[in-house]
Length: 180
Length: 310
Image (tube, each protein chain N blue to C red):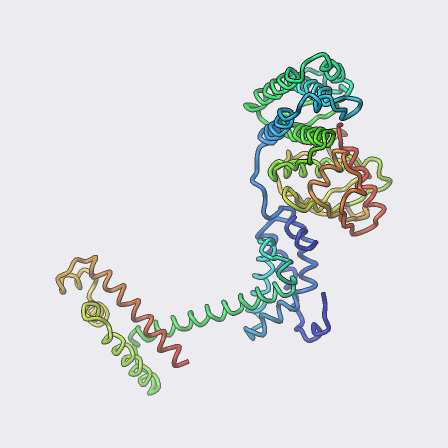
């Protein structure tokens, strides 16, 4: 009956479900995330999803409590994944950007480590891609200048650069994940 | 829904309930069914109901046409009644005041009885022509202007939904009389019908001894949720008039209950409620879930049957 009422747009039914099951949903999210603010966001996402698409809950497949707990866990894991990706992007961006000033011995060590990682990643690229990356990122040439220097059309230079950057990102992500 | 291990669950942060419910209602309006049926015009709803009715007439044999069905009329007489209704609607659309308060059955009785001397095919053809004439008159017209016929005063669009309701009801009268399975309107037509019936509900509540705030939840395709107050002070529109909003134009749930009224929530199937509003089912026939005073809910459902024109 609750599922039919939700489908019929009865917001009192949604409030009833919240009062009965929000603790359980919040607990599921909190166990994965360990952060009350992020867990509250997950609770909101789960109940908005239930309200927007009540037909996705199939009473024959299990209880509403189980359905919402599974939704909460999936959503919480998504949040963790997304956060990992964000941190990895930040880290990669930091490593690819030359530090303006090395202010401490620790920074210098990190910069040296980063340079080594990037250099070794670039070395593993195919020669044609390695050439455009070195010209663009280490010698500071624009795409047009890279194309002229290598003797290829500008579009080809751009596509080689895109391919090379995608491979570099993948390699650096893998290294970051391994180190964490 | 609260097993013992829930005692170990964390306390919900303050304000989370309000925040979640508000976000949900921003994502989908209260009252609106999900999935919602595609919105169709009242003209289209009437046209579909007429097509379904005509199909039944085409399948009837001579014996079927002679089957007693309603108020002492056989099927042919009932179709004659509907020819009379179409003719009165034509006059109303032309602004003829004589049909404004004409009694629905009495004003069409002569046409109904005249059919006995005719062949069924003639009756069927005349009814189809009368319906087509109605469609020709309303298709180019604005649905908002009010029209007065058989004691009803409502926008043309609302009148067409009432007529779709009537055709579906009589189609099922015939089906039952000849032993065929009942039919259900398509979800888009049904959505217009349930919306109209729910919005007219306050006009059926005059007999209630005290005001009752009703949350009506109609489940299944064509359903929705409505908050209406029945009984007590007269609704804004005069008796017999439709509510301000034409059917199908706005989400269902209205803002809030009236402070002095008792409250009941009634959950039932959309098609069953339409049969009730057509006075073709009794409250006992429905599978109803009630929250609040059962006696008040029963009075509300009994009042809903008075919406029928017959």
